[in-house]
Length: 501
Image (cartoon, rainbow, N blue to C red; front, side, top):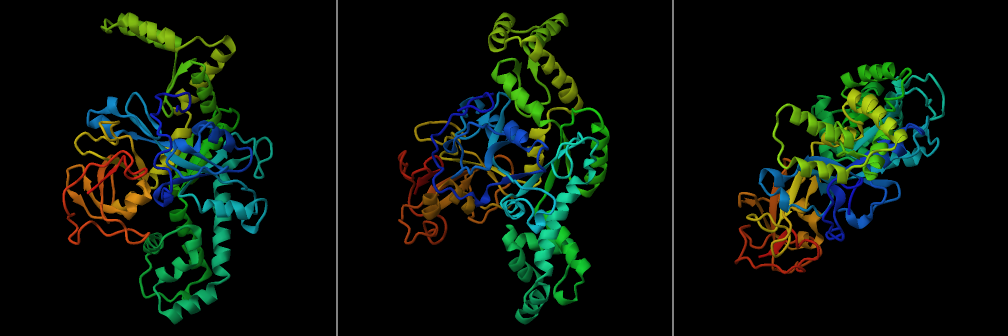
C-alpha cells in the first residue's frame, strides 16, 4: 500500500503479526482541542484516511483512532542495506527516513466544564488516559472562542491553561474528596507514599515508576505522613502528576491566517515554552493541500520536509546548476524523469501553491504538523527495535527475504521479553533467548534503547506447560542443543523474527 500519495510504497505484509499483538508497550498520541480549531484537519493531514487495519501492527483501529508516523533514519542506511529494505509496516523514503506507524487518538468533547461532566466531559477525560502524550491544537487566528464558536479577535493565550485546569480539577476533586480515607488507610497499612498513591491514580493510566518519579521531583522522602499535607500540597502533587503523566505539545494552528495571528503566536510561545510546553507553529490545512497536490503530481514533497518543489522549480534547479559549471550525469534523463513525474498546475492551483510556499513553508520551515507528531513522541524518549531472523543478512523472512522489514516503536523502558510479546504470543510463550546485533545473549529484562536496536529471537522447542510464558530453554539461560531452521509457517506471525532452538 501507499501513504499520502506514496513517497515510497510499503512492501505490505498482509497483516502478518497483527493477531493478538501486545500494544501495551507501543505509544499512543492523543489529539485534543476545542471544536473548530482544526483537529479534524490535523487528523487528515497526518493520517491516511484510506488505511486498513491489516496494514499496521495494531490489533484494531477504533473509529476515533488513526495511524500516523514517527520518523527515524532506517537502520538499513548505516548498514549499507537500504535498497534491500521493504518495510512490512509504514515505508522508507528515498533519503532513508523510516516512517514508523504510531497510533493517533482523537480525544473528543473538550468544552468548558469537562471536569464536571459538561459536553462529552467524562468520555473526554477517560479517553485522555488512553494516550501517552498529547498534541493540543490551538487556533491562533483568534477566530474560535473558548467554546469553539466562530468569532473575531479572540485571544487564545489561555487555551492551554484551560485544558490543564480541567485536568487538574478532574484529578484533584477525585483525590481531595477521598483524602481523609486515603490518609487513614496509609497510616493503618504503614505503606509508602508511592504505594498509597499508585492505588489512587492507577485509573489514569500510570505506573508505579511514574508515581515515584513525581514524588522524587517533589523531593518527598519517606516516611511521609500524608495527613499533614495541606490542600496546597495536594494541588502541587496533582500539577506535578499532570506534567509527568500528560506531557503535551502545543500546535499553534492556522498560523497563516494574518490579522492578529503573529501577536497571538508570540504571546502563546512566551507564556508556555518557559513552562516546558513545546510550541510548534504551523498550518494543518496547508499540509492537507500538499497531500492533494502531490497526488495530482503538481509537487514533489516528502511529509515533514521543510520545502516542496514544482516541476518548474525542479527544471530551474537543473539550469542553475549547469550555469555554475556543475556537471550533472545523465542530465537529459533527469529532465525527462521530471517531465514524466510532475505536471504543471492550473493557474488557480499554482497561485495557491505559491501562497503556501511563501506564507507557510518559508515562514515556518514546514507545515508544522509532522513536527508536532515528532516532538510529541520524542517527549516520551522512545526506542526503535528491529527484530530479525539472521544477524548476518538482517533478513526477516526465510529464504533471503526483505532486510529489516519489521520495526517497532517502543515506550521508554521496554524490555527484551516485552518486545517478544509484541512480536507474537507464541514467541512469548515459547521464548528461548535473544541476541543483540553483536551476537551476545541479552537478558530478558534488558532494556531496549536507541533508534536502531537490532535483535534476534530464538524460540524454545519445548511446548509451554501453560498459557503463560515459559522459562528459557535451559535452566542456566544459555540454551540447550543446536539451532534448527524454522519453516515459514512455524510460528504464525513471529516467523519474521524468531527461529526455534
